[in-house]
Each structure stands twice: as C-alpha cells, then as structure tokens.
Amino acid sequence: MAATLPMTATATGDYRRRNARRLKLVLFGLVALAVALALDVSIGPGNLPLGDVLRTLVDPQSATPRLSVIVWDLRLPIALMALAVGAMLGLSGAGMQTILANPLADPFTLGVSAAATVGASVAIVLGWSVVPGAGPFIVTVNAFVFALAASLVLFFMTKLRGVSAETMILVGIALLFTCNAITALLQYRSNEVQLTQIVFWTLGSLARASWEKVGVAALLIALALPFFLMRGWALTALRLGDERAESLGVRVDRLRLEILIATSLLAAVSVSFVGGIGFIGLVGPHIARLLVGEDQRFFLPVATIASAVLLSLASTVSKVITPGVIYPIGIITALIGVPFFISLVMSIRGRGV
Amino acid sequence: MALLIRDLDFRYGATPVLQRLGTEALPRGELAALVGPNGSGKSTLFRCAAGLLRPERGTVALDGHDLSELSQRERARKVFYLAQDTGARVALSVFDIILLARKSLHRGYALAASPADTHAVEAVIEELGLAPFASRDIATLSGGQRQLAAIGQALVREPDVLLLDEPTSALDVRRQLDVMATIREATRRRDIVTVVAIHDLSLAARFADRVLVMNSGRIAQAGAPAEVLAHEAVSETYAVGVHLEHSARGTLLVEPYIQVH
Image (cartoon, rainbow over all chains, first blue to last red; front, side, top):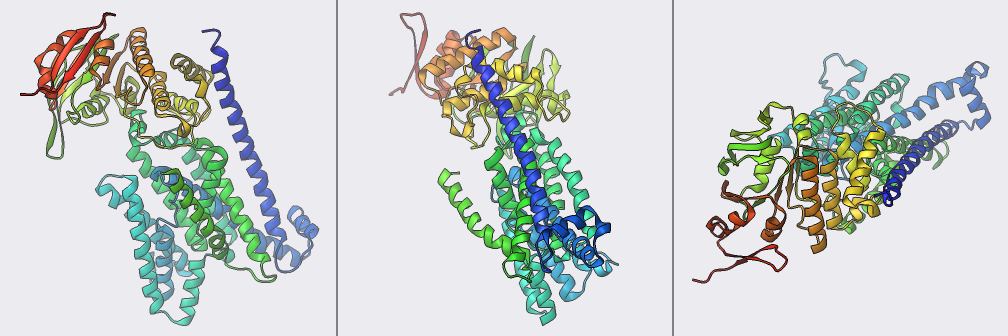
C-alpha cells in the first residue's frame, strides 16, 4: 500500500495544480477585462490622444470640460455597460446551459430576448405600458416585464409535465418563434419612426447606456455571482445527470427553478437596458468550458468574465469599422457569433452528443 | 442492525410496479444480490429505498428507524443509490466527480475542498485502483472505468446503505470479479448494507451472502444463494430451467437453460 500511495498523491497534486491554473485564468481574465475597458474608452469619435483619456480617468480635475464630458459622460458609461451586459449575458447563458444540459441554450435562443423585444415593440407602437407610470422608461420597463414573463412561461409550461431539460428547450424555441411573429405583426402596423425604433431595439445597442443602468447592472452581478457560486457543487453534480445529482442529495427541481429565475432576471435586465444582443451568452460560456472545464466553481466566473471581455471588444470593434460611426453592437456580435454558433453545432454533432 | 423494507406499494400512473413488496431484514456487513427479469421493478425498488421516489405506502427502515422521517440530504447521506451509467459526457475528472460526491454531503457553501475531503478521495482512489486514470476526464474513459469511478463516488460518501444498479454490466471478466470482491470487502469492512441488482446469477451466487429474487413487483424468494437459486421461484421468474453445479474449485455455478416441452 505504501508503495502505491505516491500514485494517488499525484492525483491530489494534479487536482491542486489544475485548480491553481484555473485560478490563474480567473486572474488573467480580470486583467484582460481591465485592458479591454481601457481600449474601449480610448477609442472613439473625437480622436482624443490615449494619454489624455487615461489622465482624465485617473485625475478628472485636470481635464478640460470637453474631455471630461466625452470620457466620463459619453464613453465610460458605454464601456462599463458593455462589460456589465456581457457579464450578465455570460452568467445567464452559463446557468441556462448547465441546468438545461445543452450548450446551445442562452437568453437569445430560448426566446427571452425575443419576448423583451415584443415588450419594447408594444411600448413603441401601441404606447401601452405594462406598469402604469413608467413614463420615459416605458420601453425598458415593458421589455423587462415581458422577458421575465417569458421565463415564467418557460418554467410553468415545463412544470406541468415535469421539468425535463428537453421540454424546456422545445418550449423555449416555440416561445422564440411566437415572439418573433408578434414583433413582426407590430412592425407591420407601425409607422416609419416606430419601425426604425423597433429595428434599433432588435439590433441591440449600447447607446442606451447610462450611469444609473450601469449601477443597477453592477449590483445585480454582485448579487447573482455569489448566488450561483453558493450552488457550485450542486450545479456540477447536475452535469452528471438528474438521477446521479439526486442520489448525491441535490434537490434537482428546486435548484433548476432557482437558477432559472436568476438567469431570467439577468437576461431580462440586460435586454431591457440595451436590446437584443445575441451570441455573447453562447460564446462566453463555451470559451470558459474550453479553458477551465465544467467544475462550476471556475466555469461560472470564467464564463462571466469571458463574456464581459468579448462584449467589450465587440464594442471597440463597433467603433473602428467606420471611423466616426458606431454600429449597433448586436450586429457585431451576430456577425462574429453566427459562424461560431455553426461551428459549435457541428462540433457537438461530431462528438455524437 | 439491518435494513428492513415492508409493504411497499408504488405505481407509475396506473401501472403498479411494486406491490406489497417486503424483504427480510438485510443485516449490516452482508452483500445481498437482487435478481429478476428486466422490468420487474428492481430500479424502482432502489429509488423508493433511496427516497428518490415516494411509495404510496410501506416503510423503509434502517436499524429500526424509518428513513422517511429524514430530510432528503440526510437520507442521501445514509443511503446511496448508484443508477446505471447514463454516459453523460462531461469535462470533469475522476478525481473531480469523487470529490464532488464527498462535498455534496455537507450543507454549507465552502467552495474549496478540505484536506480531509481530498484525503478521503485519495483513499477511495487507492481502494478501487483508480490512480492510473484519476486525473483524466470521465468523457475519455471506457465504460468500465466510468463504472469504477461511479463506485468511487458511492464509497467516498461512506453510506450506511449502498444500492448498486448493475455495477458490473460494462466490465470485462477480470473487472467483474475485482469490483464484486471490492464491493463485498467494503461491505464487510464498513459494516454497511449493500444490495446489488445483477443479471449474472453465477456472479450473484459467488459473491452475495443472500439472494433476493424479484418478480412482478414482489420478492418471490430470498435466502442463501444455494437454496434460493435451486428454488423453483427462479425458474418460474425467468421462465427457464436452472441447473446448479459446484465447479472443481468449489464455486457454485448457475446454468440457466431454455426448457423445451
């Protein structure tokens, strides 16, 4: 026995080394986050020298009023919004993929984003507010309520027949098509101005960023990430299948409901703030899976960070394609995301899953 | 000190699966083999005993205490049910999943594994000879290796009752013997109740201290392997003839054959 002990000591050693490497990746991700943010703030219309921008960030008092306004009121909220929305979509997608055991699940593919678009369209075309007195926030509030409603429909329809991962995916797809049809119906009876607004909404754009929204998003992430991590072991157990997880003492139905509500909230807030930004919630978690595997203690934070970095980079790209023009970021993520989505589908088929 | 199941009734919709199912007391330190045709309700019995399904009536008691009075977590601590492998392809190592089985015992949210936890995992890896592939992803393992890793998940939790559904189905001849011997050894050393659902009657006869024959939701016969397997209940249950023979090495061999009338 003594002779073979070093072998198992190696197994623990391997485990520790793997953990150390995964922890390093989390730290590296945080550095990448800072770099992406600096890049995003530095680039944009106005041709400001990099040094001036960074100095304005570090020491706002020294800047000219014009510089201060551009950096602090225009660029920084957008850049931070990119990070926050990326993080929310990434965490939301990662959670959905874990509870549905499907790497193609995210707020976009499950119809939550489409439902938010319906809510926004109802506000734009019909002027109806779901919550009375929403005032200038009518579009955002409607989008939020509809997105949340979609998640609840998703849950309760599957609850009727027992929460199996397959039924949830199918109901999500049905929801997606229904919402798209309703949006199309509203577009058909809208005038030109309204149509432009809906299209702008559908594309997703960080131009709607504000410091208040950044604050709300940051708070939500600060609450949601620990909420997910507290369930880290149980979520990892879920990856071994419902039955094994139950044997291990996990209350599978309750866990799935908790995570579904949390992911819906994240998705609903991000979509209601910036419109439908697709594929980030799909690509970020996939990168995380490749980097750190499926131990949810590392997978969830890395998926969150990777998605934030991706959206931040997409935000930068949206500004450099045509100097002076900022494209809606949803177009950029879709252009990058679709080929990726297809390769993901192909690789899954190749693995025979 | 034993596991005792009494009067279990369970139905899926309108289909009765368990009907007044009861067992004799299954003592600690003994390995029981549960045999019976496909669809006779073996897995359902296990799920009811583990508390994953709620029987309409009847009790499952361990050492005289009704298990239904425990919370799901407490019950999962005492009774571990290992279902047949579903082949989930997941990027987790053998070490990861065994540690996971250990960590999910505890309430509380410590993300890091304590030295006591990793030590327990190491001990099980040693016990089952998993060391050569302990750091590999389970998605890359053979069916047999996965099955061994799953048994590692069961043992690391140190349950009082171990319910194993077909633990040898994906194993080669040598590993079948190894795994059954390991399970029997662990049962004795840890003084736990182990029930193994198994199709191979010879393997059951060889390793089990007692055999339970299940037919249509009931235990048709139970007792020492040589007596039970010789009983007509076995041939009735499977609709086969059964020939028993001791090999030159003294092992009880069971030869089922199809009767021609």
